[in-house]
Length: 249
Image (spheres, rainbow, N blue to C red):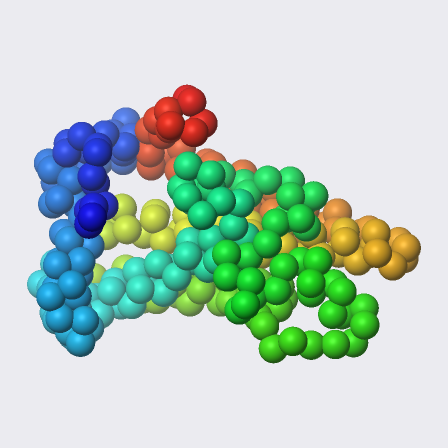
């Protein structure tokens, strides 16, 4: 069963907040998600399709100088949610966890949860145990995952800024993509800080050394600030999201 991105949803624009941001550059959702559908169809047909095929379409849409950077920014930012889901998996189903819609639980949850693929990534508990005993198992560690998340955030924002400067003219579609990139970057930074806070808290509990308390508190406050900014940005961009299957709201 292959289900496209907008399966089960109304095909008119049901999730943008038209009061603050104009999205009248499209009517149907497949028009908004043209690049997704193009990549889905083309890569399914031929996985060896080079990026240039898609970059060429972005150049037509956003201008010759900006097109490649728009594609690159989207490519980088698209790694953020899958990485979060891989490192902190509350459930192998979107009804159990949707990283782009929720906080991922409190710090105790971050300490207790395991990665989606435990053969590739360490959990917070594993990392702390390895650190306290001076061992290593070759898996991706929590600090490495945090560096990746922050790297994707910084790089996608920088490339998007370059695209905005190179664009031939103002574009409502490009501005919509910019807000998506900014939201993903804030989400990445939130999870990176939350992971680091969970590590510090668990280190304090396991070692009994209270010098870890202040880093845990500081990183939690930073995470909360990223989430506040994320909420402000998405409140302007989107309607409240209807999720009746799991959140019942």
